[in-house]
Structures are given as C-alpha cells and as structure tokens.
Length: 113
Length: 114
Image 1 (cartoon, chains in turn orange, purple):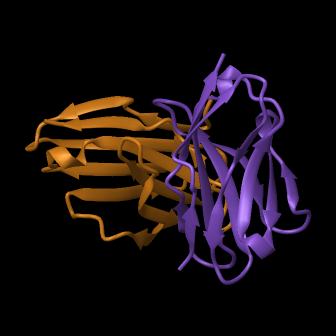
Image 2 (tube, each protein chain N blue to C red; image 1 turned 180 degrees about the horizontal axis):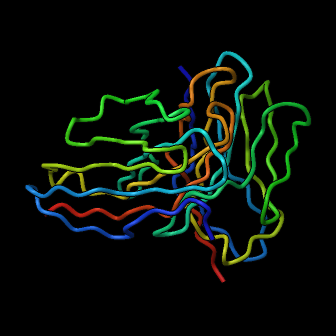
C-alpha cells in the first residue's frame, strides 16, 4: 500500500489533448515532487514544491505545468505533448524537503499518441 | 555536484544466496544516502537511509547497508535473498542542508533464480 495516491493509473492522450495528473498525500508532508521515468532508467526530477511554493523546476518544457492547490495536493497539467513524453510519471512527497526520505506513489503510465 | 554510480546494471543470484549491490557516490561533505526498490509497474519504496551516526543501517525486508566514507560507498546487503526480492534497486544521494534535489544512480536490476 502506498500513502501517496496518484490518479489515473494509466492515461492515453493525443498530442492536441489537455489532461491532468493528480497526486494526493495526507501524511502532513510539506514537500511534493514530480518525477518522470522512462523504461529502464532512474527517475528524473521535474518539479519540487516546498510549502506549496515551486522551489525547483528542472528546465521542464512549458507543455508541463505543475500546480499545488494545497499542501496535500499536487497536479501536473499536460498540453500539446509529444510521443517522447510517454513515460511513467511519479509523484513523491517528503516531510520537509532536503534530507527527508521520499515517499512515492505508484505512478501514472502516460502514453502520447 | 553530487553523483551516484551503481557499477552493476544487472545481477543474478540464486534464492537463498547472499546479495551485495554496490553504490559509490561523489560528494564533498557528508551526504544523505538512500536505497530504494522498484517492482515492475510500481513506484519506488524506501529500503533504508543514512544521515549520520552508526555506519551500518538496517532497513526493511531484511536489508542493511554500510556507509564507508573512505571508499565513498554505500553498499546494500542481504544475507539470504527471496524470490520476491527480484526488482530494480536504486541508490540515491541528497545534499545535507541543501536543496530538495535527490540524485539517483542508474539502478541495478536483480534477478533471482529458483
């Protein structure tokens, strides 16, 4: 069982679609993360929110837009994606940011057609 | 900048055999070190972490790891592997007192033969 919940589990979208990935945690963690993971590769950091403010953007293309409505929720808005954006998108949270272990969700498997 | 090297891309062991997965890091000060495990189609699960203190740390599922500053290593061990341990293992390093960024190694895939 994971304490970080991601929805949907699978998503197929066309290149002109707009969709959103959702992530929720109720552990009182104050840092939340989006990672992208391609097959047989380690996770790559995309964004970090710390105390609901964007603290790290790893030069991610603007077709990915993160949002942190409150300390428990994290969204990733997707628009005009490319087939190479197909990947497993992982959400994670940690108690207070640096030094705190990450707790990962099970991810959303995204396919862009 | 910190970096992590996992020299073994793929390791195969027999069930019941001992296991050691290697991890070397590059960082100027004392890092935070982690081992995560990922089963197919799943997220990453924390096995254990090292922040400071005792250099031998115990984790879940019978795993342990030893921090060796002189060798810049944080190897993961298990005395007797179970078939359910087959998965991808990632070592990661974080910067004490620094940003939230965690750097992952490329991972080691573990196959367990019956």
